[in-house]
Image (cartoon, rainbow, N blue to C red; front, side):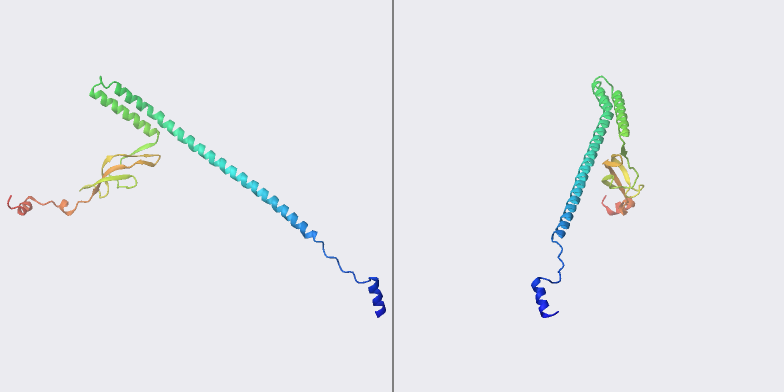
Length: 201
């Protein structure tokens, strides 16, 4: 292009068109849409969380009500089973002045039978471990006693029976536990050896 034509083109504003840049509003709109979507998801998650918390609270309250009802029913069952025992004791006290010793003993036996029946219905079982191996989880040793016949560490005698409720220990059985004889106990000194030890006697 000649110098004169170039000057005329510049003067007339003729030049190659430069492409326009994308508007700055396009990415802003995208960010706004993304923000709106995120807020919507956050609101949905918050709503789900609140519903879950409410459901967990309902489950907890329902479980507590069931525990309370079971406890109340258990107490009612216990009271119903013990009422006949109380009636029997009251009758024994009322007739104590006129009753004979044998009649009083018979009344006590009848009361014990009522109590044993109540325990059976409530699944309260007596622990009587005579002859069994000593179990520290269910037995309480009050004494160890030498025995020539019982197995060492077995229950030689039950001092007080224990009780369990539905397989859970209420009270351990108090027992005397057997132990092996030591040498002196196994071979006590004879009369002759005692005389030799005490010649003055």
